[in-house]
Amino acid sequence: SEYTLSSTIMPQLLRNVLLRGVQPQSPEYDQEDLVKHLAEIGERGVLDKATKGNLGSGCTFGDYEVEPEIIDKFNKGDTFLAIDAKEGEKVSKKTVQLHDLITADNFKSTFVYLHMLASRQISLENILDGLTFGGKFNIQRIFSAVPLQFVNKYAFEKPNYDVLEILKIIE
Image (cartoon, rainbow, N blue to C red; front, side, top):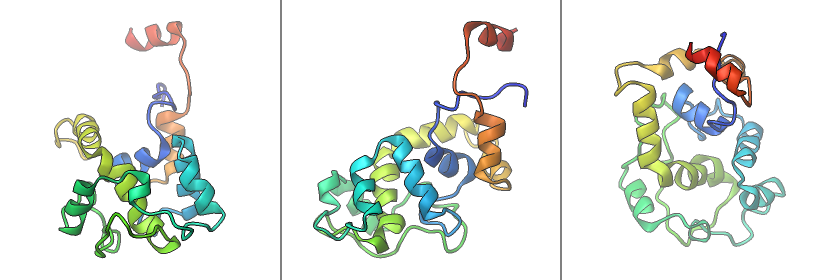
């Protein structure tokens, strides 16, 4: 497209979730890509352990400040943004406690959802509401048909704009 959004405006994890409807626990979301996308957001502590295979080294959901209220909602089946997920992409049905260890098995299926998405539910729902004009425009239907690389190139290619470029867009 002629005009793109700044690539710094929305991390790739959120582009996948909000724009494409691809959840972290989806088989479509490659583990290696997920790790890169978390690194982009600055989740180094989690990633150092995940990439070294040390997730079972004593870190719990509580260690990463996943709030008890979020875990309670999750355990009751109250999830958000996963409602329209394709079959097989729903958030794990297993219950979670603050003292549960983060493992390779629950890292992608549960931890990323609770730590990165559910903990930011209000802001993410409001961003999605704005992007879809209050649900009138199904942005996920459009972007889910193409790979993330396409979305990155045609909607978020340029990292920065100078004043002249912004003025040209406004005109």
